[in-house]
Image (cartoon, rainbow, N blue to C red):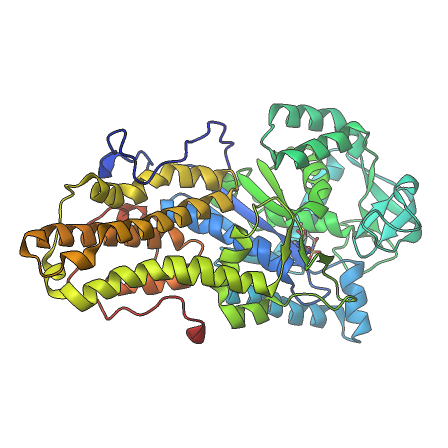
Length: 539
Ligand code: MSP
């Protein structure tokens, strides 16, 4: 994604000091620039956990927003099926590796569905297309003179699938706390040391290529401290992609895995439409623990292969549970399937993005999730919808059917134009991966409108003929606000907002370019009886 350097000011809902822009003032062009958003491909050595759900949700929200704009979007997630860690899991279960990954991939795919995420592709690294792509990249690097044969002797942590030098080992463990083993084997190396200058120059010129800022700084410090050549093949392991033309070597799992970002675009056929449209306009969403792989190794491989580095790597933080790291041995891992079953995918999507700013660490507890559900979703957003729709249904549905009110009062105009006026800032938030900011603007405006209704006092206007048109106009404006909020919130809360749109006689499907629906007239003729949109019994 293009770096967005010009901040967009946060808009005010009831901006009375300056004239409101008219409905058709919004500048967004129909065809903008492409967004290629990726999640890491997840190791299938174990069942999915909340960390996996987190990045998939974030990527899905960004992709849904971009599609809503009608701009070219490609969103990909998938699974990392090779390497020692996965091989060990298959072995411990006494299952052939391929059969094991086939089963696990199904579970990861079902998490994507359960989260209501809609990727354009789901990649598995055991697929033929990926073998082809990874081998093609290897050959290109080798042909261009960036690979040589040597011997690796050093530490390796299977849990991290990472090589560590002597000085990185602390108390016999990797910096991540993972156990390490001494490895000595012939292997191929990638001349990473040769890329130090280019990487530094690239990042100095592209300060938005890594976000948040502290991850950018961390990467720069790492590169400045000097880069060593990287072992990129293994001979003691057979579960992986064979190194083309060098029998007995399989590719280092990270070399294999990173290539997935090209495979899904059709690499090695760089003339394919998808490749031409989306590379290098990527936002690789990753956890902070796998930063270095994405901000040092990956761009170096790409530059060495004559390809452009990714435009953005965004590293998010880690979730702990009640202050502790989640791990199987502590028995405190949160199962995303169970949370979805209890609270619904929308609640989980909302909570994970609203509880902490994307990029920071956070602590998760089921209590906090339930509290967020009740406070933000049920009692604020759900309450606003119910207040407006139930009022109309109960007191004035016949008159409302006929109403097509032009805005007169400035507050009504503010409500009617809000969706469109909020758009530039919301787009800016997505471009900054500020998913918290996106939600916060919508949620704050919902709170303001709840307060506005209390001031507007529609119930006091009932049965007063001279107030009838003002009442209808106010309700119409509130409904336009609500419909636009439903459209904009649908990227975070797809299922619930579908319900809300249906209750307002709207097309529930959000399709490419649905942005045009913001600020459009309502179709008030046939609204079904309103029902609460947040209701745990119906999850
Ligand atoms: N297979 C590699 C990625 C290859 S991408 C080319 C991998 N897989 S993983 O399954 O171990 O981790 C996937 C992601 O989950 C990482 O981004 C990691 O940061 C994230 N998380 C793992 N535990 C997490 C939390 N407790 N909280 C948030 N995210 C966490 O690494």
